[in-house]
Length: 419
Image (cartoon, rainbow, N blue to C red; front, side, top):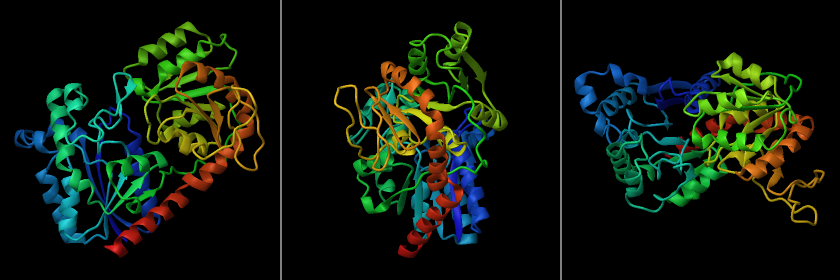
């Protein structure tokens, strides 16, 4: 097959799991014998653009004429079977869907965020989950609250873009929802269920897991929606050293919080931003990975990395996190008191857990509250060795490149055949 993979890369100064996943997917498709035609733009190009190109930037999320011309030439020369779109903003534009269709090429889009509805793509504002723009023809709340890049003008442009392209999105031939939560979002937006396929991302197999390390690792962009303050509030409810070490990796506006916690307690270490070798070393040094998001996090790549390394995960019960950990299915109540919750799928042993804590196939999910996280920390520490083999098994069955690439090839073939 011949596939155009279209993606507007996020700035390299802003670490992006989406960039990493697109790069990995291109490599996986190429290894599977697919002829991949990358159609890549980068936000890092913007500072070096000519004055005339910069003058067109305000309209590029809506139209991006240069990208449409370049794509038309690419299609005319190579006649691809499918165009696979990831992020279109700001230099590609959703108009790419119309351009592909005009040339008779069907479109698949992987949905990495909630930007069909939400100008920021996060469903998160002022430290809280926000869905004020759902169901609106124009996202006026996004403009009022400067949700896109902190600018009322840019928020107005993005809200207008989403309104203009509502019909564009609904013409996409197949949506790849990374988790069941994203599929729910798309159905709520009005996409028919038969045009939605749940297929998570995969990452390369790092090989047989190293023996479990000790303690916990929190590795994320240090921004409010990633829940560092939630984790630190929960951690401080335990005596210094009671839970083993907590390592914090990443960078961002909340870096001072991480540095202060490391200065305050002997059991907290701030590792700073890490390269790929540093990420692997940090995972291997730990027993449990923490994903403390306070927004509907779509698919934190760190969780898949943890599962691949045979590390169970303690995460909040938001967005795609329960799906990743195999905790989004029905479970039977366990125990008799108010502190007992469902913990076992059919065929598993049952152990009563603190209220607000649920055990999944490959980790634990908790309510996004400090008390629930604090209650779950000793549970995860005690249960890490038990769930470690299941974590690796879930990666092999659901997130291994061989599995997700075959699923993606099936999607391409079905879309091309129907088109």
